Amino acid sequence: MNVLKKNSVIRYFDTKASEYDSMKVRGFTGKLAEKESRAILEFLNVKNGDEVLDAGCGSGFYSDFIRRGGGIPFGVDLSEKMIDEFKDKSFEGVVGDIETINLGKKFDKILCAGALEFVGDPIKTVENLSRHLRDDGLLVLLYPSSSFIGLLYRLFHLTHGIKAKLYNDSEITEIMVISGLEVVHMKQITFISKVIKAKQVKVKP
Image (cartoon, rainbow, N blue to C red; front, side, top):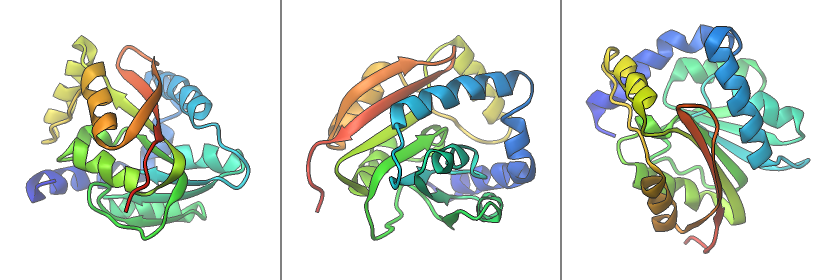
């Protein structure tokens, strides 16, 4: 991700850190987040003791669900203020760019919910996430689909100086395949969001 875009993303999410959880549970946004959460948990299917990387963890909204399901979440986010909120919930996490970070370990499952639209290079990002998966590990990805409402979502972020990328089915599938992942399931959740589950199919060096 270029420095200018990265700084815009950091500034925006730094300003939202303290209220991010409450935004996820109230009003219209809350109703969408509830539907997305159900689908994510279904796809992720957290088992007791699963080590789960929450890539683009924000303040820990989804990591809360992961922990309740018996999983052990570890978060990465560009925003230091988001990570501060994340750690305040007794989660482990670090400030970092999911496109390039090397955590030096592998995970049973990876969740990337609402982050891929903000990265500089989606293929490089998913390849990097794939390198952090154990053999037969699962990646669950929530992303905005190309649609009229998706364009409104993109326009909203443009007003904050951020270019959010939308994805169609063929684009997201190609990204998975290039990254050595096999698509297991894909599902439309709301009029804007889709969830895809992919499985690690080859050992990464």
